[in-house]
Length: 159
Ligand SMILES: [Zn+2]
Image (cartoon, rainbow, N blue to C red):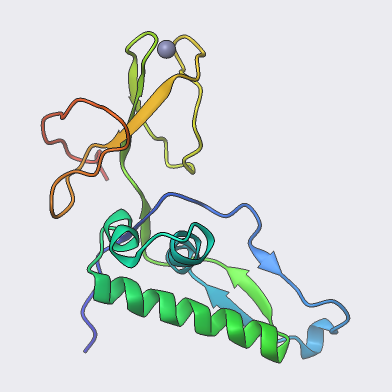
């Protein structure tokens, strides 16, 4: 019996979620579905070119689990390309990574809102001198981007 998996952390929610081959009638079209977590694995490893350890840490996964997701995602994309299938991005077991932002101009702090992580403008002063860091420590300590204060442990909000 498969164990329930813990959510994979993603930092990116794709805005385009359907890719269709040209010239194939809908009736003949087969489809593969990639989860948002699988797209994140591809993005970190193949698009950003990060090493596997960094990828696994950013998705809050063991390296072996990350490798499995990546392999599965690549196989699906290969199947779409070779067999001419449509590709749908949908579902997956994921959470948007918990990040805290801090404005270096006015010291305002806020958390991500569940949207993908671009460098946001400060909601307080509108400045772009913003740094972000993980609020929730992952195994091996919290992964911080830039400087940031370590905060008390916190729940991720109420369900
Ligand atoms: Zn500010």
